[in-house]
Length: 588
Image (cartoon, rainbow, N blue to C red; front, side, top):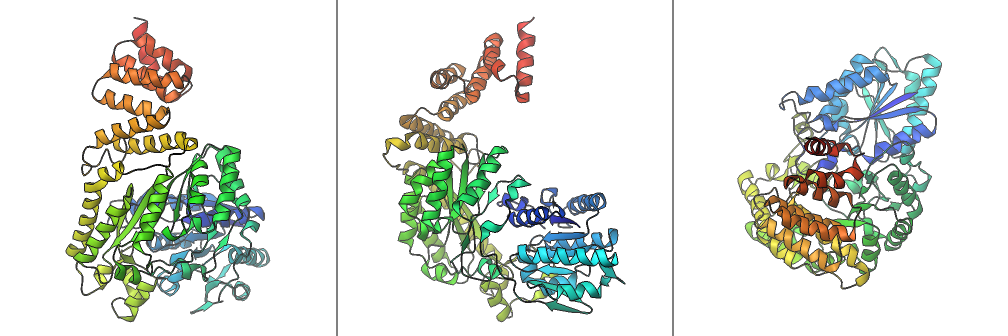
């Protein structure tokens, strides 16, 4: 039995969420489970092919062409699509194409979009056979096994273009799915959840990726989030620290150096976090990672181990500074708790990132000002501002349905989600956009103050980590996203200040290199080489410092001297051009 899992392309281009281009971790779990059982399975990621919106020139065709080529090449018996609201259009287009190319293939949708939009998808996509609801490992394994038995007995899964009666009988015995049963749709109810997540296979045995998850579920009740309904429980289940450590170690051995831990509330179980971090520290994996959490689950006792284990950023959903808005969004956390959490995270040398939502029910100019006031108190070093949108599976969407502000047929349109301002009769786009502009401008107007307010723990044991934190942050102002953003004023000087402050804590190769590169920008090559000399006195074999020195020497006409810095790294193809130039210049 051959199964091909597909991550469809989003409808619109990704602007602020590049994570949407990655394969969902759930597909890796599903594929690994089938591979462990000897069934052939693979994953096709269509997301990088570009937006699937027909109005985007040629992009929809790109994703569909890639899909068609893969289907004809792989000839799968079952196609399993991970569907979200933004990917539903491409998923349905691919399903229709698959039905044309492989008429007997079993077409299955899963994921949050399929779980919450089952009726719509069955009505709109004639090619769709089955939906797996919520957590899919148990139901998917039973589904594939049933299909395999029917294929072996009868040679086909369909008869007269509908699912065989024998397979329908077997599907009716599998909890957690919805399937076509003649002209009707049959729902088998809820599937049992995996009680012990450690019994699941390690996806790293078969795949390489950066996104990880230690837990499933969230204790929160955010009205804009579908997580509680998707998992079907408020219970949070976790892998053991040992299981996740083994996954990280295996991926690190494959060359992955940075990870995104995507738990809704990673720091909820402090003991588990500490245990995981201690394992990473002892193994000396040399990795970095980002996490997501809530401000009411931050304890200073876990931040030190997290930082030593490589954590460089924690993202928090702040949402709003106004108490009434927080209550409407289901996140009534006191602002003082938010501020305390940001202070603790920043002091540990971990970058605190804030998510804000604007355009919520009841939003006004005054509530936006409260959010700005809170942001200034928080001093975030990175922010993301989202216009409130709603989609099936969330309490806000249900509220809009009950009020008659929307209906299921709206998903026939080429839209990814429903902005709340389109539903709420008290709002309009220009006003909501203005709120977003105010929030973003306030962040950029105050970012230099946020940088100047950084106060790190005066613990000598953390000095190298503090230098790493400050120099990493400096790079965003010298050569990263802040350097490229015209809204950031005085970015170059902020970078220099951060690099210099890093060196006050500890000799840091990135800081020496950063200061040298700032001099290079000004054509001050002698100044750049002075910084590089200092750096190389501490780190004589550091590749980045050597290459930077070689480039400086080339700019001063010393090609022979430059070669001495490039040659130890001649195996790097990126340096081939520089080395060839130097050789040509020195042999004339």
